[in-house]
Length: 527
Ligand SMILES: Nc1ncnc2c1ncn2[C@@H]1O[C@H](COP(=O)(O)OP(=O)(O)O)[C@@H](O)[C@H]1O
Ligand SMILES: C=C(OP(=O)(O)O)C(=O)O
Ligand SMILES: [K+]
Ligand SMILES: [Mg+2]
Image (tube, rainbow, N blue to C red; front, side, top):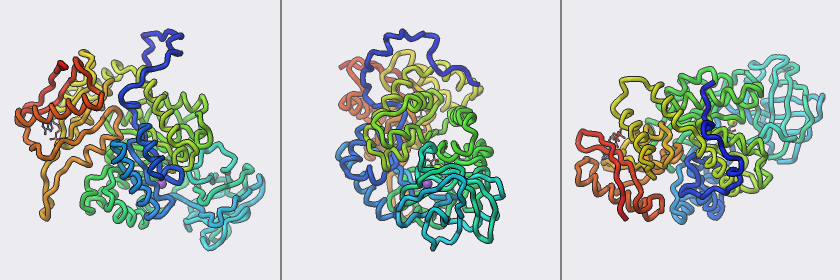
């Protein structure tokens, strides 16, 4: 496929693999999204997650009510204040998800070659004979021989708690299925996935709309994770919906690609969305196992070339119950970084796992090691070639800033930005050093009140590989005169020095605008 992303031209001395790595200032350039839930909602554990490197918190509305999520979010706010670590908020929708609610929470044993009925009668209790689902249209959607997967919410796909069914026949409103493997379903919620079958449920359900316009608006969500995005129109509709919700017009939409329909419309979805989540949980069971890696590599490449953040899911499922990942999982995380992921999304591991903090920490360490051997030089050339000529001014400035920073071995790149665009473009060229995006607030009005922009832009960089935001003081005017530029730069440098990311005598590359002129400058610090 695309040439090697590993620095193989400098063969690694085998003994050097055994040397412990020095810890960098940031745990990793690759970001970690943690799903918060029962095992990760106390102030203590959330603080641990933030200190270990989580920079985006996902609130999955597939389960739990808005009060529950609100309580968790309040705890997150407290933890952010006490740890002084920024964290963005992502609302994940339910979308076209088929679910079985297991009210009694008793585990349900299913025997291979037995029959189980999927019924839309949600009044029934889930049992070994009958599973009530939230979708009445399944009888019309499936035919004999189709396969349906049922697993615990946030299933891993390998446990003995999930089951494959084969559709035998439809009977009235019910779908009669043969059980293909024995399993015991556990938990209060199971999700279903019908392979290659169109589920006629809206991508944004009424419940999703309500959650977004109440919980989402109240909490000014930074990201909307649009579950089961199937085509670009889904993203356009979500954008139209957000545009009427005040501040949420600034919310970024991350399209979640979770089925074959989303995969076939990937290019058009990528054009509309602000970012992509590669949901290996769902799509990973829809694809033949031998094809999963191909989807991952192709999709990440497309996201990288488009300069849009890509998030990969389901990496260390086994850490839900274990303190250490399997070798295959550890290698998979590193390959996700080499393939171009911006962020790793943890699901069951943080939500109900026994070791949420340790998981974040180990994933961060693996990412950091992989980043060290990421072939930036090759990647840079490929990206420049892909963009072609003539480049836009900003793209040329951004790529030059990265080039200069690598040539002079700068410790950081400082990028001034208001919209966040310049910082994102720099990140697109995957610099080997952190980029501090100094977001300059702009005064704006909605005809009713004045407010400052900037907070969304700053938090939204928390999902982009290599970007670390800093919100400038709103008293600094957004006009880029040399005096204001110098004073903001001084604040940024001081901030970098006190936090330890910049040291005396370091070189720093700065990207900013003076009047109409964009400049890239290299500064050498004294002490
Ligand atoms: N307030 C500012 N002061 C100085 N330079 C800025 C400011 N905002 C953006 N820049 C610089 O202007 C150029 C355009 O950046 P971009 O992020 O597209 O700006 P905008 O936020 O105005 O869209 C980049 O070189 C960026 O570093
Ligand atoms: C992240 C995924 O979806 P969810 O956790 O919302 O089921 C996935 O399918 O990988
Ligand atoms: K969801
Ligand atoms: Mg999913």
